[in-house]
Length: 395
Image 1 (cartoon, rainbow, N blue to C red):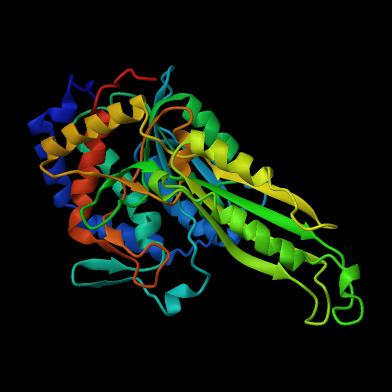
Image 2: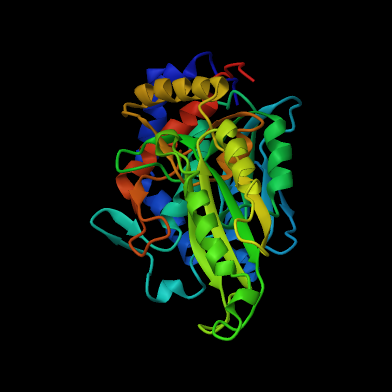
């Protein structure tokens, strides 16, 4: 293929050609998406991933990618696809094929098309994003163009549980890449890109007290429940709505019976923050908790699973390229901060990252999950133009 020309991200001719090619193949995009949705792939059932991996491997190999499977330890295999053996940093496409839906969900939530929407488990989060990525690459080739940087695709099997197994490979590929495009769903009906995501942490505070008979010897005990009431107030005091910091004690478990002074309570805590600075401050606050009840001790476990994806200088440069690409394709584009985390949070630590390039739709993790079909070609065209755009050079 000939090398791409400069500033293709704003080339009306290339953008028009690519979008028209994709719109003519919308039915093919839908057909592939239905195949992927019907290949159920819950994170917790690694054996089910064989079919979806086989489909994706075949599609990538047809594009000329060299595909390797990385065996998971406690999850399914992950896919690494290399589009070119050229030396030097390239660009990374990130996605996942695991879903939150239990095996058999298709019985009550089948893949179906209604009112221009494709419904089904995992359609929106995020198999449509995978389809758009594949067709973006096809469209570039059909236009006789070449991505400005070699493309590597990393598709993992454990994103829905925080990517514990695939994180090392994800970090490695991100460090080696000039930029990363994340095929997670867009934000809202307008299809906003996710230029900021909150960091996500999970903590456990285990409170150790001393049991005694509540009627016969109440003074001999040390109530973990009384201590929990103090610590819950201190934890909620760490909330800072103006900064986007949320600290939520989501579950409380403890006690033996109404006539027993409670010897132990466990608090499960979810934390979300918008910056690395707040991440450090909140974690320090949680670890600094001290008992307020005599005879009680605290044990704090956990930490942040994903750092925040922030609007750094290099991420803003990539966002500006997306605005130019959208204009060339003929669509409006806006951005959003979202509370949920993704692999974009991890990639952003190492390289310029843009998230939310997947489908427009609604219902991630909900029974009404769906994709707006007519938006799929334009989203694939946007991604194609970004893959063609010259590197900004901000690292």
